[in-house]
Amino acid sequence: MKINYIILLLALTISACGSKGQKSEEQSVQQTNESAETKSEIQPDHPGKKVYDSVCLACHMANGSGVPGMHPPLAETDWVTGDKERLIKLTLEGMSGKIEVKGEEYNSIMPPHSHLTNKQIADVLTYIRGSFGNNASEVTVEEVQEVRNSL
Amino acid sequence: MKNFIPFILLAFFAFSCAQETGNTQTLTPDADNGGLILPEGFSAIIVADELGRGRHIDVNDNGDIYVSLRQHSENNGIACLRDTTGNGKADIIEYAGEHVGTGIKLHNGYLYFGADNEVVRYPMQEGELLPGNTWERIAYGFPQEGQHEAKPMEFDGKGNMYVTVGAPSNACMEQMRTKGSPGMDPCPLLEYSGGIWRFDENTPDQHQLENGERYATGIRHAVATRWNKTVDELYVVQHGRDQLHSFFPEMYTTEENAQLPAEEFLLVTEGSDFGWPYCYYDQLQDKKVLAPEYGGDKTTQGRCEDKKDPIMAFPGHVAPNDLLFYTGDMFPERYKNGAFIAFHGSWNRAPEPQEGYYVVFVPFDGENPSGDWEVFADGFAGEEVIESTSDAEYRPCGLAQGPDGSLYVVDSNEGKVWRIIHS
Image (tube, each protein chain N blue to C red):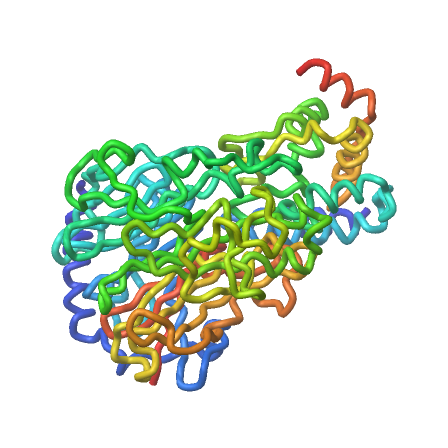
């Protein structure tokens, strides 16, 4: 337990230092990524990785860190680990306009991906929700179909 | 306002002090040159750090420095820096201006600022560091479509202002950045973007399409722009298109995607057409080729034969974000009238390693380069191999020349400013 408290304190200190602290954020992301390698259930041969590498990686980067000021990160953000319906919808329809992700403003455009199959979308969203330090539940084919029907 | 009067007094004293001591005799470079790797004889001083998300930079005749910011810092978009002791370090850092954006240029007693949707100007006040806060709008009506919105501006000394209007698109596909979607032909975006627009530099409230003139076209996006006063012409460096492999994996490998297309160094004369979106420049074949969205097969030139070629080609995706023609006396003779280009570094080389994050030098003779480009300042990224763009510690984004001939570089991650000197 003691060790947990020390880690918590360390994490708090790191995040407290980060007034303009992109570096601090990156450090904490890296730390979580390292621990995720042992904890995460997502395996490198997960079918979602193949979709990620061919469709998402160019903009969101191999480690889900995005591009500063341009493409938002997928690591440790509520946009990915939070509301599944919102995530499925923005994947299908794309997205534009100003958003804030982890304290940074983004104003670029993500193209729609409705041409992907329900299975491809379910796989890739499951993959990103369980990678890059994320540890959120899977997305099913039925959930994608449901959102697709509602659009 | 109460706090303003003592500040003016302070600024006045500081200014007098800087006038007396602000010379390179007293400059002591940082022990590690602020992390930069420079040619022999050059050294660097960190002027300021953590200004915010820096973009471009300009330096006044008295040495005061102005940095545009992409996001507000302390509710302002312009960082104003003054070195009162002459040691090269900014000891007064104030913030001004309500706009955020990229373009920033001191011109005829004004500080012009390129917000993404308009170009405005703030009045400069003699002896004061901060510009006045009563700004006026010079040009507006630019597309707001979430891509390539930076608005750098240049002046020709004859009363004209030139503004890049980037295309809100990658390759003018019918469906934005979607695999299999064909290119629109003719590309309707060229009517209002993908080129350089010319305005009167003093007339307020000019609408881009009603009052501005399209000076040149077929330029996807050019953040690096500079009027070369020696030859009296406009030069820009274009951000070439992205995602050849993502959209045409059967035609381009990931390695080819990392290299192609070239980032093009363009001499922009009135009426020039550089071919975007129909064409891109392949630096490995030394020619402009037809883009695959328009039926291209990697080698066919077709309608691209008539498009204007670049004066130099750089590797793909390295993101030229500023250009400066050196006119100072501090650097050795071979640098005189040559071009410095700040490359912001790539993202679209993944899964191959990223590239860029350096300042290059291109020697010039008259209107054209007289030799190949070379890396002038490196070490910004901190790591040898950058896989993801966010791994780069610093990213050079803006360049300015100081009154003594120093070269200033600003980074976009933290707003760090270096002053490069030669002794």
